[in-house]
Length: 403
Image (cartoon, rainbow, N blue to C red; front, side, top):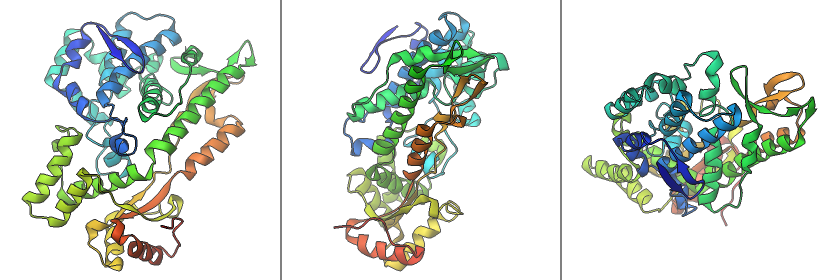
């Protein structure tokens, strides 16, 4: 089957993939935006997890062909299916609720992925094609050592997932950044693992090094401009407050898309007669977002923060004399920049790229760490008194001043 994609052009998939795409779980991904609330900043960012899954399958196939030298057979079909299904467990605004606010386990945890694979229509297609076991092993990383590269092509450091969203997210955000497809030719399979070749005939390949650094810079750029944009973060903090306060369960959210979740929050707040949550839910749905009132380094707040986030918000609200729904805090993850751990071939063998004496990489990693901020958000009319309360509670002046 052939699907036209605005990022990659024609995507070619085996005919049986149509049945996989037509499952209820895959079609639900059409209602989950890839970048959560980023469309409130970049209106073009309405691309979905479904689109990204198609792009990941296309990129996984290209990566496999480049690294292995062939492109047919059971492994290829299983890899394409695993790529299509890699986000099958995603909930609406999953990265916000899972990675940033830790309200639920990650969508790609073993338990969540296995549960998704057990859905009748998905399992039926995979069993019919004789692929269920291998697809499961790829997604759950249960492969023997000599086949580890199959899992690494979808979920590792720089993989098909990353290569698709770097290109796709930049495209829909309107950012003029891309990478050259020739970077795929630098991948190979060595000792059963996916490796990026920095060496050729005993010499460092500067072009391969430059392409790899370019991918890492693009990853940083998207994080700075899109993922950590303060407006997107503020909307996410409002959402996390509502989901926690109204007690939505994971099982409910696994049946929803973005818009249904937002409407459900409004309906639930009205049903339980929680006027403060209702006001917050309506504000979020209508883009009447809370503003930054206090900003400081995330590194100053990480110790014990997640065990006390809700109490921190309540303390700030009491000090400021506002309701607890009118204060939302966010603590940026310190970030591992996992892409820098990509396995590379060097004169001394295979090693993580991060461990090489790369001054440019060290500087980039330091910049990435500095992106992590601690924010306190509040309605605009309460920003000054919430800022004063935060400076008193944390004994530190805000780095952000409203003018």
